[in-house]
Image (cartoon, rainbow, N blue to C red):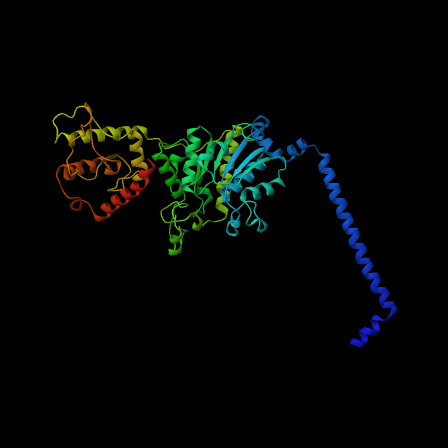
Length: 464
């Protein structure tokens, strides 16, 4: 075999044929490369020949037609800040940039991870390990080159709020038209929303997309109306404790948990050893990074947030779920509680005129809605609710009269429980006045539920 190859290699005709083939391949490569280069040059020249305004107009023509030119002009002149560039934030940013927002500031301390590629809008394998703010900017610059970017690769902290949420171009430009909260850290999320609310900076917040699978259950509404959402409930409760019961639009899901559906995953002993197990959690002892997430749902939330921002900035007609305002009910409960305390105090002092109770209407709303979930702790009934002491105090119901000229009932928020008015009447007669033991009147299930709610409130009390 080898001798045959040697004879063929020495054959002059074979050598000429091989040379011709190799030459043909080389020439073909040169021609193909030259054609590709000429095509690139032609495309670049074509792009360069099109004025930027005309290019933008053509790319955004469908959006402009939908909004109408006057509304579209407002969107084009807008400045939006997105805080958090995970699944929700990256999809929201992509949608806003493609819709016509011209100035976008990105705030996120994190890097792209391999596990986040199932839900990130633009990141690829090549981006793993790079800062999310620069990954998003770089990828979207290839789509919308006219958008101006400001990137802050850092954690949002209220101490840096003036700089991170301040005017465009280091204070030389306009204030933000909207801030998007796409953070999954509870402390940072609440701090950001409180900061914006106190300074009247328009903000919209995304609640939890984890463990959700039904896009038809995603709504935009006031935070006071959000239901069936652990992240929303914790955020809402913390904000109420800070004196902010409503007034913040959020994107949330009403999907209920059920058998066979994804649930929060418990922590292993190794995770507890790492410490700060509650820092990124929506419930005690859970980390946000072990929250099961279907890759499609953060996109749904992100686009819902972006859509709301576009509608708001352009002033396009739109509707959201109204806030849950029950001020009249809270005022009635406050009045009923005042009457109850006066009746109880009469057993100790003769004159109860001028007696005050250390609680406000906002406190009533917080206890009813957040601590007791809008239901009686005894029966679970959600109507004709009121608040009443759970236990009779050891020292009786004598008011605090240390302040001259002012009598005040002595109790803490956590001493009160939610019942129906009928249940409270019996409770006052049997427990608070009659001295009957709680165990002799209520089931172990009811007592355990009250203790559970009180322990939860003890954890939240430090934020008040």
